[in-house]
Image 1 (tube, rainbow, N blue to C red):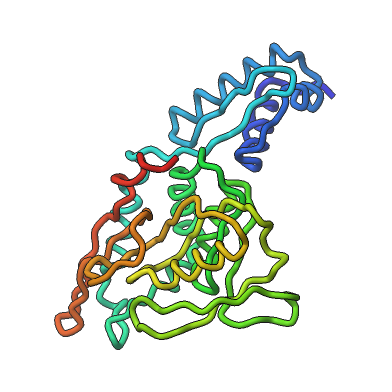
Image 2: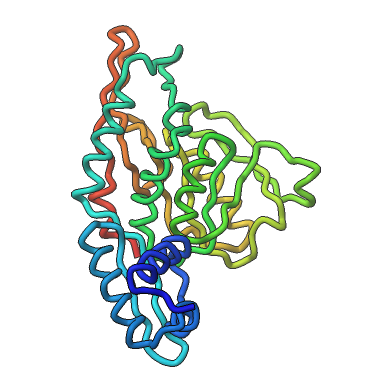
Length: 277
């Protein structure tokens, strides 16, 4: 079946967006659309230009017989900043205050459009880094972790507080909660991750960073390495931060329970993005 150019462009765009960071040979598209490679190259040039103009991402071309193209998600500052401002406004709503100064974030983490956009922005920062898996801890960070992983085209690994019989053999570590200073336990199935994996840690909220340090410890038990740490919200006024290298979308600077005020601002994302390799 012969495809018209408009049909090729639509289908090609959809395929590339569904397979981020996957190298697709030109021969695959040529056979898929029964078209010459020269026509496919022209189509890809149009897609690349549109992606870059619209701030969707870019196409990387790999030359040679084993080469092809791959879609890399890239979110521009002009697109990311308004979203982060809206996120700050959402989080600053005083109705979010819970007893003890905690914030209700479940509705945000359950909103597909918000989580997907946050996932795109985080993935954009790590789109060209070497990452094999995205790791989070159950349960609130799971939607964000999957949103990031879908843009990086890697699996998600979920660390749990207790072992499940369905997980099989597990690796267990004890860690000290950075804020509560309590000893807690983390468990990860031995089948979840291969040794030597490069891991991006993603979480919804970080105070002192004890939970993140626990995940770092369990990554080390798998003889793997941390490729990056990203959080949706970080608490700013912490006496002792256990984690230094991370990116955040929103920074929680102060919570006044008595006055019912939540002060938030854009996190360190734009400052730290250039340091990621």
